[in-house]
Length: 134
Ligand code: ZN
View 1 (spheres, helix red, strand yellow):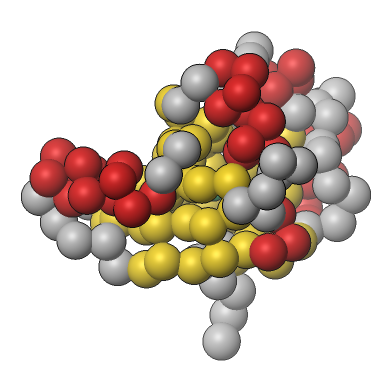
View 2 (cartoon, protein in one colour):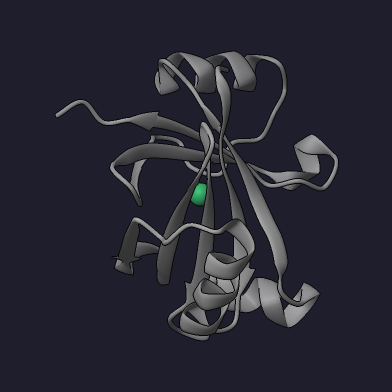
């Protein structure tokens, strides 16, 4: 894995949280994107060579809405940038990690993504992500 690509933070209200993070980081967000398949709206900030992703659930069944109900707002996942998501998934499965999707899926910000179950990684939801070549 190459670097921390982004840290995902679950928020109740994307607009309010976005304004706070603009003040905190001293930069404007560069992208707002809805991912209907995941039931989320996202807002991204550049932070050096990593990013901050704010996530707001769009429905009661959204994983983000459920997360906030259970744990409140806060860090939801850490995403690692990978060169080849298919081989990383195979490698991790071989090491006994539980991946949450059998095939990479299209995530926000032009990425192929796969999640690793937090049970496998001491309570932290891990996202693998690979930039989709244009
Ligand atoms: Zn993410």
